Image (cartoon, rainbow, N blue to C red; front, side, top):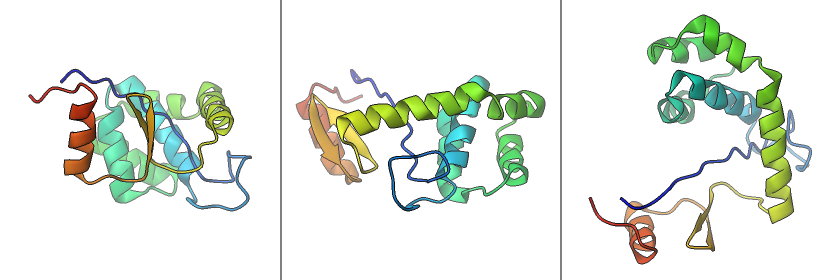
Length: 135
């Protein structure tokens, strides 16, 4: 309780990221588009979890995930191909570059930067130290 999570996409994939010199995460641009499109189905986090687990490589496999989450296929496809999604990713990449971000995950908690995956106990401690309340 008492925390706000704001998530930004930072795909390390040359397909959409002009700030990198090699593909660290091939297909990350495609998966970012899928995640953003899933917001309109009110299940961004459900899709994000499936993306990490199954890592779809094409439209067919993305549609299988959408079906698994009971998305409206027609709406999902329209959203996936919406140019606003690419613009959103480009804007987030520009912001990350201005901040000098070059790693995922990067978290800001209480104004301090934390880079890399944190064990649950450590993340919990950091959050509580910065005002989060236990449920």
